[in-house]
Structure formats: C-alpha cells, structure tokens
Image 1 (spheres, rainbow, N blue to C red):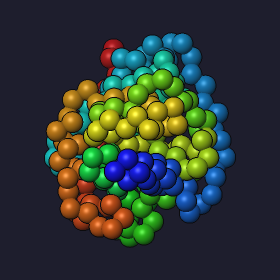
Image 2 (image 1 turned 180 degrees about the vertical axis):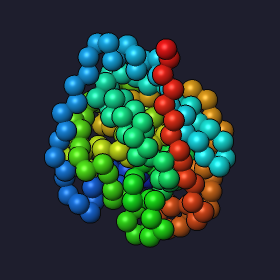
Image 3 (image 1 turned 60 degrees about the vertical axis):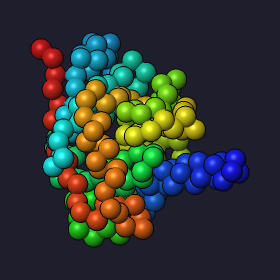
Length: 203
C-alpha cells in the first residue's frame, strides 16, 4: 500500500508539473519589481473568484511571494482571467485554472496556455494545505505564468516546489463542488466552470 501511495503522489506531482507551457516551450522571464508600499497594500487586497457555484475569496501572501501576488492582481485587473475555466479538477487533490486557452471550446489546448511570459519562482515555507492557492508550472521551476491551483486537501509533497501565494478566505464549499464534477479523461470538467476575478483593495 505504501508503494501505491508513493506512486500516486509521484503521478500527481508529475501531472501538475506538466500543465503549463507544454505546447509553447519556456517563455522569457519577466522581471517583477515590488516596493515595500506595494507589499503592504497587497496584504490588504483580496480577490473574488466568481463562478456559477458561488464565490471564492482569496487573501494573499505578498510577504513571501510578492512577484506572484502582483502578477496575479495585475492580470486580474486587466480581465485576463475572466471567461477562463477551472480546466483541471482532481478529487482529493486540487482544482486548477487560469489558462487563457480554456476560453476556447477546444479542450485539446486547455492547460497549455499562459500570459506569454514566465516569472521567477518564489518557493517559500507556506504549506500546501486545504485552501492553499499556489502556482502551476512546467518542469522548469521558473515557468509559472497565470495558471494557479487551489488545494482541496493537504498536499505536503508539493511544499517548497511550487510557489504558494495565497489562501482561500471563504468559499471552500465552492471549490468542493467544482472538484466533484464529472470530468473527462484529462480531468477537465464535462461542463464549463467559468470564472470572473475581481480585485478588492482596502482604501
């Protein structure tokens, strides 16, 4: 049983590791500079992911992943995530979204898209536990772009290998509904689960 468990964890890790940039190769790294004032402001900023099942509210960890938080907020403000879907759901593990290719009905390209650049990894000590929000990437550590995932169960085997940049403040019941949806062999839900992401900054 232990061997099966280890194999299962390894497969999940490999599966998650190959979801970004599988089609287009490694994009150029984008330098993201974040000031102390921005870090303070982002710590009071929330993101609301609107879905047909309800809302998921996120809080950020700019103190450990300032570049990733700023990148997510900037993309959301531009409407980058609006109309994208949660294109991969794995019960007992996570839900993943943020790929612009998922706006297309052609599921063959889902999981292969990004913003056209990558950002440098900011691996940290935040654990991958239920409710953790982390960035998906390819085998290259510095390959995250726009795709993110929300853990529905603890996944400590991902710790310090993927950049945790936030957590769910409310709406895990929505994530639980999404992860339980019927899905195809690629773990893409049979019915589209589109999102719209709004950024709420404390004034």
